[in-house]
Length: 336
Image 1 (cartoon, rainbow, N blue to C red):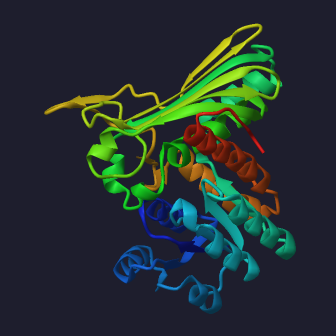
Image 2: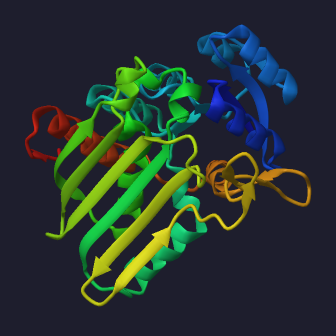
């Protein structure tokens, strides 16, 4: 039984708490959040202890591992503290937003011998697993010549995310695209050129971009288009649009990562989003993201190195930093 702690009781923190509490190989021991009421509410829901200081939680609770579910740019301090306290870490994506922070986490993990998994949960989608097998194991479409990956969300996401002004489609959405492309193809992005638009959210007083679009050169000489927006209309029925297309020298692979075939038509059309969360026969939440979290638990208990690991997190971060620079300068930027 893996004794889990949780730092961050926001949207993703609530998913982690439920998963650790319900999975038969883990137990949620403690929840930490700077908001005392939020920490207490989540802890009480799942029978855990509540804290407002993660250092106190690490000192007072018997923990084997901790999930760090803080906003993007606040991963370094709690992750390093957990590692130095001898705990394994499951870190929300992206690993960090600066190379300095990411390397500090890497150094702490190397020094302490603890595991760090970056939770790019889309790797656990059945479609992504099948696509990776087709491309890398079966060679079904041959060498990749062209790739297209896009992830978009409705503008309402920026209303529900309290730290939306501190992130962007690059960090919040394209991080998924970059990791998924790397995982399915086995290729690296070596150069990027792209653009961000700032209109809809700026009009609402939110200082972040609406959309981010990039053309990338791949390590095999092929090219990829990566695009994300979190400014789709609230009336957009599918909620999330996530797709991957790979053109190879012998064929084409197309993946709709978030298919919806159940619709509810009332005041407006919307998706009944059972693919992201449904209750199994025990009444427990089950879906690809839950599977990714349980996979981490299994790896730690079974002494298996979990992936995506620090190397994956750093590889993705290098691309995201190049994207930010390319969008800011209007020039092509090498990754690295």
